[in-house]
Image (spheres, chains in turn yellow, orange):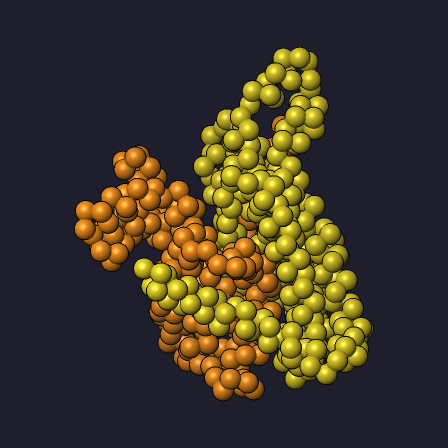
Length: 268
Length: 255
């Protein structure tokens, strides 16, 4: 029995080592192979810095929007009583079923020059596609479901007793939300925010379509990795990829701390 | 009321209108034109390749995902906590980084002498990487809850380990495996970022559906891009819809 157990363990860990650990370790090795100086030079290159700050800017807009609307959608899905609730649930989850490239295309068809609103937007001097607003919208779409998905089960578990008690004692809807509901669901929300941030920071396909990938202008950090790779600047590509990988490892750490805090709940 | 209006507006701007525009574009030339776009030689090859590689990937995932979940739940070894945490790495890592990382070890200058770049094997490899967590994370909680007394009873009645696995453990895990497989499949069908560097995007050889769509957008052939997009969307929705229906039916009839 213990012999077969050892065999299974070896196969499982071997698979993970070959698929996950070795490739990630390899890129760290290749990046720092010649010391820190070339890496530092690569990530302080103007286009790299611009890409980094653009990514931060996108996250700073898209994540708060999705957090506020995500909580709102979770409340509506869990506490609301109205027709078409199933449809709302479907719409919220839809971005997970759509390929990122298809998200990008769909946005071009609405906000692009020849899209549904293209004429109106051009008339008013607003450029969405091939500029920052398009990247923000694309990022918001692909990371839309996380907060709502993580908050909904927590709301269901919480029930409405405390909220009803607060209302009976004369609290307004807002007071009930801020003092009763939000504190109770906060870890679910935070977990959703962590997932949203990771996805927003790393989004590639949708942003690739809507941004036009203009160096130093609409190039986010993941697009910069691709750009450098295709220009045979492997050092630059690896250095930027390592920055993103470190941010991902930070996300992983945060997810683990949070899962322990909200123990008892299973999360994806 | 104001809140609901704003939510509706947000969802419309982000999801409803774009999806409507996509459907409108794909159907703008009528059903004939749509059919011609998706059955064109390059489009058809890309769609078939997407379905075939996704199918291979979910079969491998079903096996290794279940095995990894079993080892994480039933086995004890030093560092297990870290291995468990590592499973989510593909969800946290940007997809383009996944592609770069795989190329560093299994690409042209591979230090281990394995070069899959620009081959169909590279598609399977990248898809295995990005979909790894789905089966593990859906089987793991079921295994934790699984009552071992059934297995012990079977064993005490003379069932060998393989019989216990086949007759007791696997039937209980099947719904979770199926659910993980469905999520992997939906994800694999739409995957783009991890494939773009490693596959080389060669038409008829390594060009999958999402890459074809991207190429057609670049060529400004939006009707072709929209038609294949709708096919990818329908496949993903059908798989996820079937999953929802099956799990609903099970919760009503089995328990």
